[in-house]
Image (cartoon, rainbow, N blue to C red; front, top):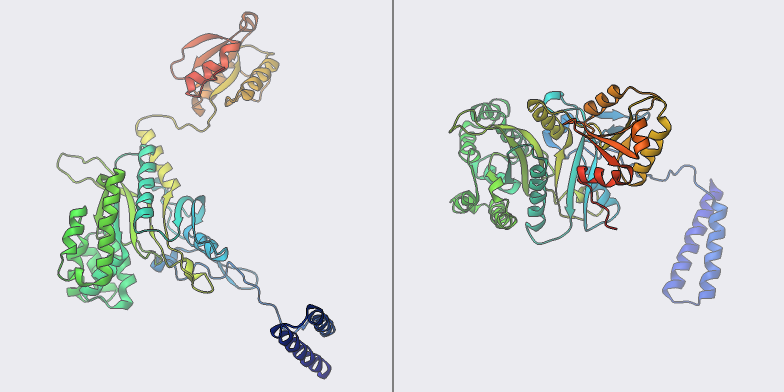
Length: 469
């Protein structure tokens, strides 16, 4: 031990000599000579077994402190060493961690992947413990509300193109909520838990929410009543302007900033032509702790049973918001990267589409195949293989049954079950005549098409671009 201590002291002294020579701007030859002596001493010293190099274990506790009361839905695990790990709860926190680790300041991205929730599954509502999310995010320092407006435009574009029915996007701002809680008299320590209660107003009545605030969370009844006066309001830009004149709310700095940004956001949404799909809703709270500004949530609307009734929400299908502080939670120096994004619940969308198709008695397509190559008689496998290869080479999505001599009826039934729209039928007579019988599965109409024209005919019927020769 004494020898090692002596060597360590020599290494320290030699290191100081090298640094001193560099500061004095000594000759390169002299510095190089002294560095060689330092390296030789370090080699004699060897590794210190008592000192362990610190290794950053990226999964360690990444998810804690990000989701508020929703943290109870995180799947907690432990590795063999007893270290706390968790399954991925969403795609936003891993994205923020990625930005911090790679020191990225500006990026626009989309991401589709599985996430996990320790939740009670409801299959008919598309609520699972393991499911896919599709996220779109914009990170970087930009002028206010421009990327936020684009995210809302993307959300409306997606939901409109899916044709899953009428929808409404509720919008609010966490700064408005925090300002509202402050002027209503909510203690700072209760902001997040009261925020979680307010977020339940889409599923519970105000009286039930108030009872939870007062009975379970210890809020004074008069404070809850003041909150109720605000959170039961919803509307458009006119409500934003009305609250800008509110004598109490407009005096709160946070709330005022949020209201001004929302007014600007509505101006951009009008230019995008989607302001009629947006509702400023003071009850929207989004329980996740990492949101810092604008928040939004899209819900599908049912057609009222009778004229004059209000449409009923049938559940959230997309949501998102601004999270300017999340990257800084992972950056060693607390470097902040403003971010805004949205998330689409893939299984929730699928569940709604399937339910609508069932009501309309339409079959769900389980394949992208455009045409099945079939045979009308036995011993025509070789001809089927030749034709399907020609179609593949021409960019047609085609397939055939993996049987030598399948019955024609079985082949047609397969198309109906899978939703394949066309059948190209080969028969002995067709081979002699140089034609293929093309059958529409839906109408059962059949036409003879010259083999050389088959590709163009299939493309015409399936809406593919035709070849311009």
